[in-house]
Amino acid sequence: MPFPIEVLHPAALDPSAEQVMVPMRDGVRLATDVYLPDGHGRAPAVLVRLPYDKCGRYTFMPQCAPFYTERGYAFVVQDVRGKFRSEGETMPFTHEVEDGYDTLDWIVAQPWSDGVVGMFGDSYYGYTQWAAVASGHPALKAIVPRVTSADLRVLTEWWGDSIVPLYGADYLTHYWTDPLIYAFEAEYARRPLAEAFDEGLAAIGARCAAFDRMLRVDGPGGFASYPSGHPFDRLKVPVLHSVGWFDNILPYSMVDYMELRSRPGLADLQYLNADSTDHENYHLREVPVAPEDDHDTNEAALVRMLPVYLGPSLEFFDVFLKGKGDAGSIPAAAWFLGNDEWRRSQTWPPPQARELRLYLGGAARAVSGPEGGALLAAPDAAREPVHWVHDPEDLVPSTPENPFAFVLSWPDEAAVQCRDDVVTFTSEPLDHPLDLAGPVMAHLAVGSSCSSMHVMVKLCDVYPDGSARMLLRGERLVREPDPSVAVEISLSHTGHRLLPGHCLRLAVASSDFPLYLPHPGSDENPWYAMKGERSRQTIVTGGVSPSHVVLTVLDGA
Image (tube, rainbow, N blue to C red):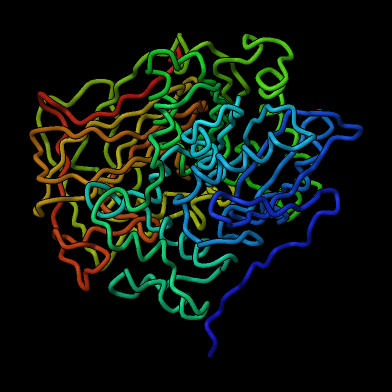
């Protein structure tokens, strides 16, 4: 029986654009669509460099083009090296700095260019913006990286000191095996997991060089992303960091933003736009997303979504590419408070935010059902442990069908939280709204019968009907865990209003499969482990150094 696999071929060329094969310094030519404004003279350009088909429905670049050209911009969209109509080797990261520079050089040499370029785009085509910054090309004047990070650690942190997002391997094998895109089911029941993609790759008829390279790496790295220096060390242009509170890349995006905000001379160049969206731009206010609101499949929904998607970049480019207005017209931080409305502030977190500490308590009840133990305003006086068993043969199942479209599925965590290997702590129902606006950090005193362990934490909004919806998550590989010393686990940032009658819940486990590569219960490389070993895990609550979670809340909480 043939292995089921779907193949995405290049979409038809858009008649509104001229395709040009732009030569790079080594002779490889990259397929590039140019959309020009009507009656144009010389104009600033907005460049998008992506691996997902410049003409395809998934990235809807032909539908985006009129928003820029009607505003007086040349809109330039390019298939990166080795993808779809572009020539060259199919390998992520490796050539983006040089190819970004050469593409910028080509743009400013065109008769329609006024020599000014900005860049826009999501995910990998957010990364290509950082690569262009690292190239140091003087024509680049502003960037709008969306739902991305400069290092895309979701693809470059593999076994070593990190918990590995297994969906990163899924991404590489589906998108970076050759110029096309493939959809097939990985065999996650197969051991070792390094072979989980083999049957799909055999059906394609090629190995994925990027995946094979990463399997050879123990620890971060594997791709020479920035041979000429990291973009943060070369940044001289304003950045609009566009993030989604429910995006699986959010932790990496916010690390970038907070790092650049902390650097002397760069803080004033950083702008934040944060919405209650996931990686695929589904919004909290649309939950549950009806077919008529699904912009991936419904044209009318896409038409409604595009102005919201593109609006912040258009305003940003008007200021920093055209000089219309001044930088003060762009809010330093524009952020959506989930279940409420848009807010603006001069800093992130907002100036009125403060810390709220909640302590893990009621350890004896922590594995007794989804409510479990308690989140308390004050710690229990006595230290009390709660134990669970991590069994690599019976892993905690992942709840999202697609981690990139979390809001689309909006999964209920309650059933998983009934398992005896998921430890939970729940607050009392709220009498008043609780506004979260900033980072969340868990401090957990953990131990294990194994020399290392995975600690996977979820912060959930628990509805009056008992359903539990994840707001944030954080993971950490803990080596030599010692329950007398708390470990810090960042859950990243959020802007979210918990409504009266709702509860806050912290859930802790040691697996989340198949989203994350499981711990084998030993120090063996999990990619090649054939069989796992059970381990006994512990969280200690109460006492002198109690386990707790630190929330950032607005005054009045």
